[in-house]
Image (cartoon, rainbow, N blue to C red):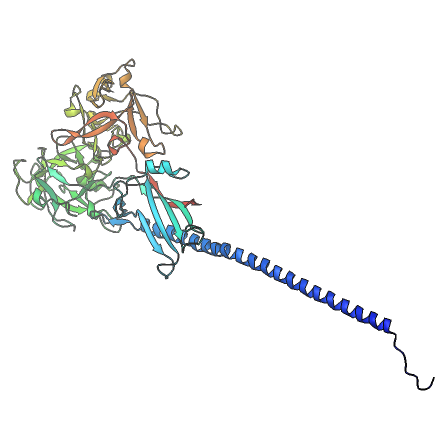
Length: 538
């Protein structure tokens, strides 16, 4: 109908309004839910981030401290290898145990007092500390002085290096690392000869005027015998008496040289039987037949006897002697001569050396007194004790020691290869007056004697105290190169009990691995290594 207004469906409109209100409520709830979820996730994520912060810092500290520990090991190694000194007599460089470090500290960052650093302790051993525990190392280490140095020569060093950095909130030590390693020293057990040659009363010593070619050699009073380079001599395996300071690489060694010939001194026109001045001249090679006047045989009557021009024919009638008719009369700058006849003029220090003495010459050389050999006292087979005496020599080249006195030839058998250093119990014997029918055996004192003298008795298979076990190289210094009697005691040179104020008695005592208990110990060279790296507990 015209003019009528349209009508509205109120129910539909109300429904639409209700639907719109319902949708806006759900959206609000959804938004709130996602807000809560996002907040929760943020809290979880924040917690995860915060929980990883400390481990990350600890991991960073771990890296810094392990590198610090490595730096400590290398610093200690450098100090160990640089602990050396120059031998005044020979000019050679040797390790100096007195300079070895016992503790080492240092920083690897410039920030102090914070920042990474290391603290190192070093223990020294004569036995391998690898795979040993703390208790073993504490019991076996060689005493270390403050701030450093050890009294005896070690074979191994156990290096412990702790790396440290700034403390952590949980524990001060969290993130600290520690490493250990074992250093094996480059060692040789070769004795280095170089000692004084005294007159028989030890009131004067020999001194070269200089180390050039052809100077005089004189006696100087004891107050001036201070062990200078011109006063130290070595008795070489070529039977030459060498000025020790000239016996170095790149330098011509100088030897005490006797007469130019055995007939006369051409410079002085002296006839045979006259004294001829000894001089210091270039040492000749062991293959040079002209070296005869540089060969000196320690005879056992306190003299150095010369050799004939025909070396194989044995000793000559010339001996080194002072320029005086009376060997007991000395004055400053008394010259050394080669004179006919031997009058007992010398008492060489054991540091002069043993010449060519050793197992091949049937001699027992003591390690501590390495210029001295086991000796039947005064060539008296019935002597109640034996002594350690300057080793007698035979420069002739005889394979039987034809010119070597019987009382220095002590026969025994070295252990065979593969025997782990041990030879079965055996007799040690001498051939009295070089007669094999007069064989006499070294006899130990009764078990009741903790320390006792040795004698030579008629050999008997039924006498257990004539049996000796010879130990050669065992791999352990303390048990090597020993002579052990049937009661488990070791033969040794007893410097606390001297014969004629000079010579140690050869006796037996409890085995302790000391140098005085070692006999015929050859030179063994071992190179250095640094290994066995391990991470250890702090």
